[in-house]
Image 1 (cartoon, rainbow, N blue to C red):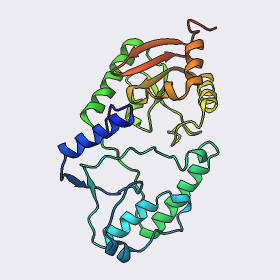
Image 2 (cartoon, rainbow, N blue to C red):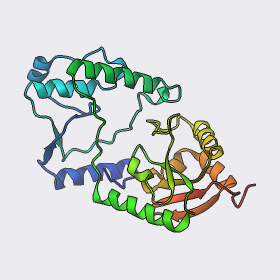
Image 3 (cartoon, rainbow, N blue to C red):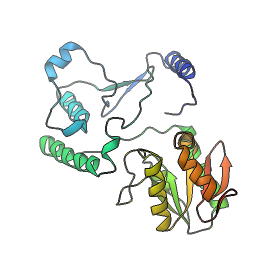
Amino acid sequence: MDSDYRTWGEYLRFAARRAKEHSGQGFELRVPTMFCLAMRRDVFSHLGPLDERYELGLLEDDDYAERARRAGYTLRCAEDVFIHHFGEGSFGKLVPSGEYQRVLAANRRRFQQKWGIAWQPYERRQSPRYLELRTQIRRIVDRQIPSGARILVVSRGDDELTEFDGHIGMHFPQDPSGVFAGDYPRDDAQAITQLEELRAKGAAYLVIPRPGAWWLDHYRELRRHLETRYRLLVTDGDAAVIYDLGGAGENGG
């Protein structure tokens, strides 16, 4: 969901405004992810606890949603409640070792064997503002980057954000197969290491879309690495920051 708050106070005002503007509104959804979930006690008594066969928590909410739906319950999202969720806070350390992907694959098999249906990844609801952001970034890339270049995109798993006409877009960070890694780098060293590995394989540009601008504040050594080694090609506060990974920055060689 699009938001522009930067502080706790701004967050509270944003949440209060949303509660007022969307009072009483909601919609049905396939899986209410369980970082924030409410149900009546009698519903829990009827459905029972989580299925503990799912390792470390991945897909246990998909399983519970399927159980509730088959028991005749409706699953809804409350539009007038806003929760800031720090994604993958529990599992981020498992990504670099490959353990995250192993557990996800094992739990996917459990889900499919239990219910006899294929597991489907979550669909993210995209706002008109975000869809316009994609278009803006593509326009900038078309104007500023030579055709055929390999481009890394801080994508948060959005495949469409890596799709360009005449360019090769890739997720950053990514797993060995090239898909989104599933989490942020655990520290600056990991971010820089993967950046250089992908650059050695031909990545020529790094695109950091506006929603990912926090990377340059959080990963300060990565920012220093970029600023001292590579050229800042584009700074567009409404769309993206783009680094040319092929040359030296103003302060480095």
